[in-house]
Length: 385
Image 1 (tube, rainbow, N blue to C red):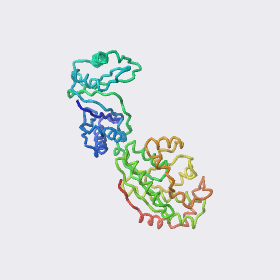
Image 2: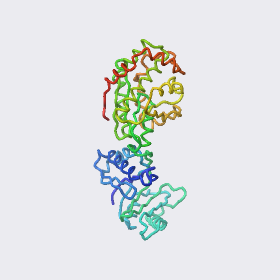
Image 3: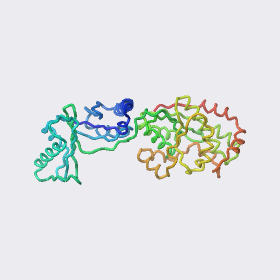
Image 4: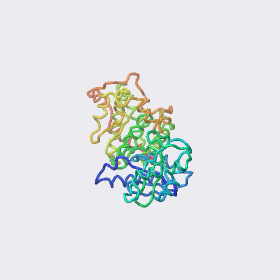
């Protein structure tokens, strides 16, 4: 008898003839998650088992696995021989010393001499006799459940609880996107949501050094590290846009500062995405949350993107919903650190809420758009995370 971790996948079972592609990606991501541990991953008839791991690392391994998209549930179990005596010995380790219980059985091996109902009845009787009155059966509202899974290889898995995983689809099965990563709450959540649908994520961050300090950059690196725990690693690209902001501030109407800057960001992001073979842009915009995120503001930004779709997974979310997701993914405490991002530099008192494209075009005509973009590209740095 030995301890194992049972892994069950999520939507992959729906994929029919393409399921092998998703299973291979899922297995690759599982191996990456536990590569720093002395543990072994094996596939077992539609499930995966982590085995031969040091018991003092159990919780760390489980926490790593819980961040793998595509994982539906996992359980800490005992693997033993499928004879009833061995199953009973494992069940005693799962049982509480007192209370109510039930036994749930699954018979993957249809040649096993007992049916699922008979397994449950037999094991339940043995546990009642062992407990000497301290346990009672309650099939409707038990205080704990002992679960038995009879496998086709002559083994049985005995476990108690299901631990919720990240669900979704394995990262790497739905193309590649470039996330515009700020230092705020929203964009890491947006990247997390797209990774959950199987998209590989790289990140692009705009900074205004020296108006913003190095701590602001370090904060973004930390956010990328948190996100990378779910995305199987990421590349973070940083771009300096100080010169663009200075040019807009000098030559253009103050109320269009943010609108014009965002249009530069989108142009730079699309061109960089095409360079790294990303297939879309991802932003953390939520409709109406700030002045630049009105439908007119989004239309202005989108109008300069020529070849790629712009995905806004948070567009219909309110701030509390986004915060809840940020807390759950572990990014919130870093996101709220008080270091300013580039959008706070030269911030107008009254930014335009409903910018008009003809007015934007007149203001942009005052700028050397291509020259400013080319200078920005000269500043790109890559950080592999």
